[in-house]
Structures are given as structure tokens and as C-alpha cells.
Length: 138
Image (cartoon, rainbow, N blue to C red; front, side, top):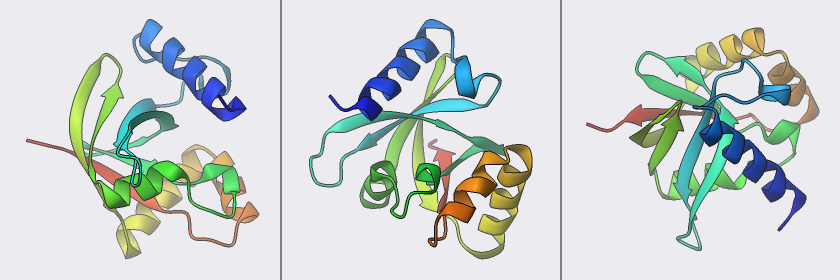
């Protein structure tokens, strides 16, 4: 298991043990667990990530800490937009949609203002960081 998988697994365990709350660098930040299906493998994976509430939706950010490529979970959601999220103690089925234009800019600007680390990620990469809206099903 890679170091990143180990790190993610510890966050997932802490999230589930503490009703959706974690400490460390994510203390006080809105965090969810995204269940997504591998684009090639078909394997369901769980990835912890910060989110921004947008009405009844959840916006998530494919920042990958400013890496030059998008994270695997982003490719998985593009290939398989039906997913689910754990938020607090609840699990919701969601459908993913990549935002564009003014919608993306509005959500992204708020995320950078609320959590300046995202602005730092943007400075570290030449790619446009995708903003994905997860819309609860039903």
C-alpha cells in the first residue's frame, strides 16, 4: 500500500470514528468521503476530500495539491458519474458534473478565499483545476 493510501485510510478511519470530524490539517474543514468507481478497474474506491456546500450540492476540487495532472478520482467520476458521499454520519447517492465558465469561477473563487491553500495549489500548476459538483440523487 502506498504512503498516500495509508494516509487516506487513516483519515477515513478517523472520519468514521468521529461522526465525520477529523483533526490535523483538516480540523474544522468540511470533509466528505467520496465513493467512486475506477474508470478502468471498476473497483469502488473511497477518497477523503474537502468540499464546499453549494445549495443542496457538494462542490469538490481536483487540485491534487497543485500536481501537473488531475487526481485519479476525477477521471473516475468523468467515466462513472454515479457515486456516493459520506457527509457526517449520512451517506448520499450523487451524480457528478464538471463545472464550466461562470459557475466554476464563482465556486472556485469562494474556495480560494475560504481556504487559501487552494490558491497556492493553483499557482503550482499550469492546468485549470477542475471543480466538480456532486448533486444528490432523488
